[in-house]
Length: 362
Ligand code: UDP
Image (cartoon, rainbow, N blue to C red):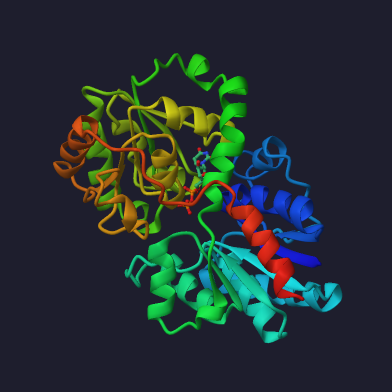
């Protein structure tokens, strides 16, 4: 079986790391991996290939920046050329970025079967560029791997035939389990930063709707500043957020308790997550990783696609406003939570995906 994988952004490296292993070990597949270049900084890309032992991509298209249309269009052109040449059995795409959309569109126009890992996620906020990507990709793909029950039901509700949807669990749980021990052994991030176990909050922030408006970003930083009065915050700064902070002149007015650091690798982030007392984020992946590490989470958004985390109190939404953030963090820190629930499968979702792709060809 010949797989043509398209990835380009940080969360996709994490997901592909475990699926690629399974494709080789469980399905004897060969993989041609294309990195679109959407994320290119060493600490947003290369570190993941090194730490998670992902084979170097067969091609790096070097496409990043610019408008959504320009980026997606350039990717589409290049991926189509490569697909014509490679003639794979499957195209495999992950998540909800422009790279995902370009891969899925290129495959469907050439009638090459395409499978989507992390299908069926919806925020119901059509202003999010990721939401449009998810909908278009799910409706164009041949096989949809739904990580949760909610995602499975959503795809059915949208009229997608049952024969195209497979419940698999979430490959990010596989990754957290596989690399969690390694993170404990190898990561020295707590020592390097002089942090105490459970003595800090871990925060990340990068969604366009949060960081592209000066007013919203300022409100978020002020809200985090309130939290930082009693709990230090470690904030690995996404390149997009860094450039907006500089552009809006917000870098110098931060509360002293907010410590900005460069984005960290996967092993360091796992160690930071498991050692933090609360995760505060607008990341999709980190909402689940907090749950995997049994750490409560506050999501800096008005909605989330990972809604199964809300009823049990594992995650709570905070509006990007000064009063909402400290209040939700306080609630999260004092909540008694039952962590003995399985929402994301058994940690072997990647194996299920690999076998399913193989069996579907028979
Ligand atoms: N992550 C990381 N280093 C960081 C921040 C995040 O390795 O400094 C990881 C995080 O643990 C998760 C993934 O990046 O596995 C999530 O990526 P991101 O938040 O960029 O995207 P999203 O999940 O929102 O699509």
